Length: 198
Ligand code: VGL
Ligand code: ZN
Image (cartoon, rainbow, N blue to C red; front, side, top):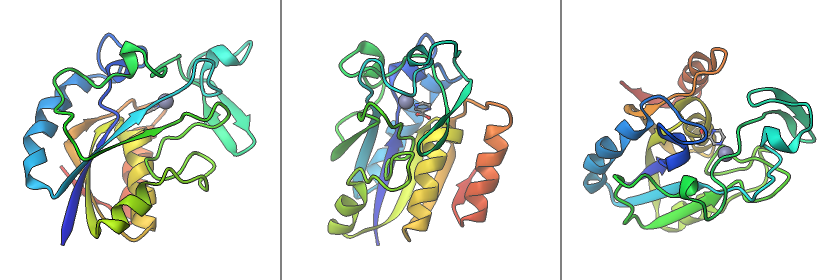
């Protein structure tokens, strides 16, 4: 069995001091570094938005961060401006080992957000990650990173639906936890057959 570690969005803006800081976000870097050598492949994802992205509250007059709007593809939470392409906030946290095999950037289309490393939030536009994994013969994925209840969970759900064997290493993830989103994400992942490692 060929196994990959998928490191989700361990970027400055999701760490303390960043624009969309996840509590304890910086703590996952060392834990993830220690996991890397166990895998046949290490893949990093990077949230990578153009300035003025449609997921930013600042792009919607009268709206505030964490409000929800209706997009053509469904409801979308609005976020503070974060992970703008080329900014320091979009860089990986300095403690993270970044010598992985592949970096998948997502969320670069102005009109659509992308939580999952596989499909954008319309659940149909692919990032190309599935093809990369399949052509390398990778069948099992372990996920860690930020944030448990958004990008980690969406990536895990897509991976499970695509038929990969999926484990989420919860100790090496941290959550935003917006209105019960962490509990909902954990339940959703469990019901799709994702192995939740405490
Ligand atoms: C994320 C909100 C917006 C994440 C990315 O990495 O979980 N959350 N963009
Ligand atoms: Zn984002």
